[in-house]
Length: 198
Image (spheres, rainbow, N blue to C red):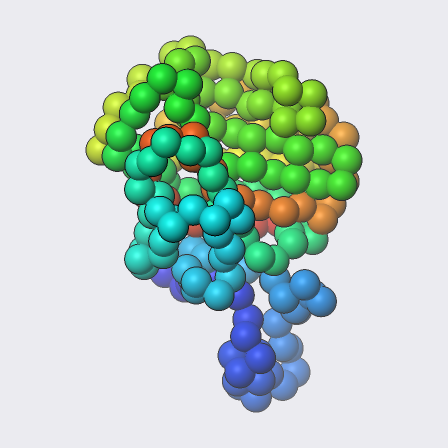
């Protein structure tokens, strides 16, 4: 499978030389949508919470269990509405223990997570309120949960293991993206980011 890569200057020059008539589009933020999985380059990610328990060991982003909430942020803004898919394997569980992804725009901030209490929901971070929940997802360790989060113009939807929830929203691109944990240890792999057309 062809990998999706965050273009470095050297990689971009190589691609232009290989295809002078049709170079890949690259926006000013350094991110371009593409097919395949995102290549996990540590230079593209930032420990946003000063938590040394985050690491990249391809093909995984890893968060070891500890007693704090923290986030691991993608350095590049996502310039348009998008869909992100990934697999998240839970290594440990605990009470009120969310693990998932946060999306932030200038006018909105939401998280999508599996949690040991509810156990799957969309949370409006700004309003501090759940906008959607599903109680029919069993939380267990060593299971790879298949996430698909779709940030579309009028709605945010999330599917985990074929269970879907959604909420209306009015977010405006660009978006920042981060994985977060509230205590759990987990691993993420097979990250794909695709543009959602209006």
